[in-house]
Image 1 (spheres, rainbow, N blue to C red):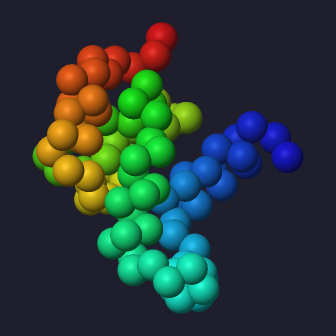
Image 2 (image 1 turned 60 degrees about the vertical axis):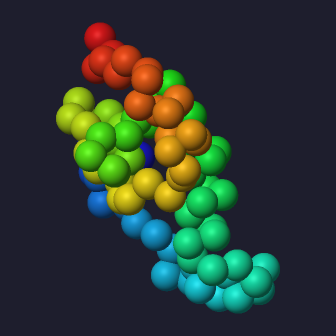
Length: 89
């Protein structure tokens, strides 16, 4: 696979949530909200930041995109708001 094809695949699938998520939530007895609360707590603040209540990160093609609502408490969210996020050169 060449770089151009790989970037197109990332564009297409980067923000896709698995269609079988509910199956796994049922298996581990979690609600979707509980899942996102746990998943959000593992986001790397060097990559992700919060803007207007949504997760954002820079993409391979140079823009930033939103990746959905934040499911953290205000205290947990603070480390993502206080970081300075600049586009990597």
